[in-house]
Image (tube, rainbow, N blue to C red; front, side, top):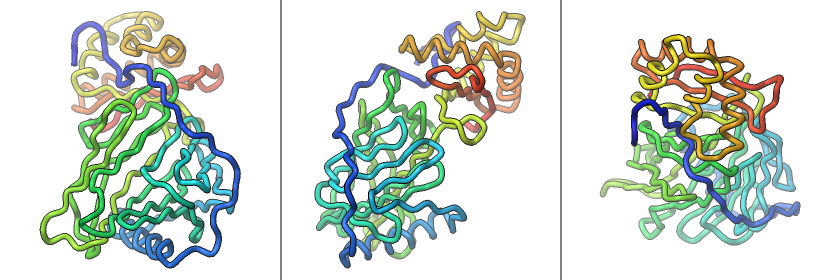
Length: 308
């Protein structure tokens, strides 16, 4: 990654992905025993890995629900794409989607998938039923133009308008299983690497949550790594004007419309951005900026400091 006077943001090349269109149809009612088992195994794994969740969101019979990132729509045909606001996610699965207690479940001989709606996004749990299951689970994504997945140092994946949280996996005994994401173009693959003592089924979990301003308005996020944060601070902290500073901070974005929205948002809150950059520089952390896309004058931008 280049460093210097130009600060590189975490948005990369323009991405164009063709995904199947969601059509409203009812999920399969009267769930099968396999679907109920997959849902129960997932609930147990989530409780072990992340603890009890205070907020719950349930899919309707049509496979849809509103989240802070936008409407979540899960198709009855698993070969079609799940959509979440500006995102689309294709499961590596086919067949009918069943409704189990507000979750969508797709069962398979070796691997099942449980889609859980969350207030700020969704969780897609893959349940590996045996050692014969594919331990590399690939999700093909549809993202806004100008955005491509970017793997971060904490193992999460930046999607611009959202992110895949740092992955986890646990076996049937609640034991942690090694896992990581691999990003290739428009796909994110979760690789699960159990040791010889792992007990199946193994549950592996990508959680997708949105980038928001004020906790409710969907936005585009740019998180600068440590070196980029240092470069940003050195570039904007010494008397540069808001317009020039915004142009510098948004210079690494290849998509012209996204860059325009970034400059509008950053210019409006530029002196707050300087404070955030200074805080990040002095604390050994990283700068993050958020802006609406397309630009909304009343809710343009926000900046904060995050762990690198």
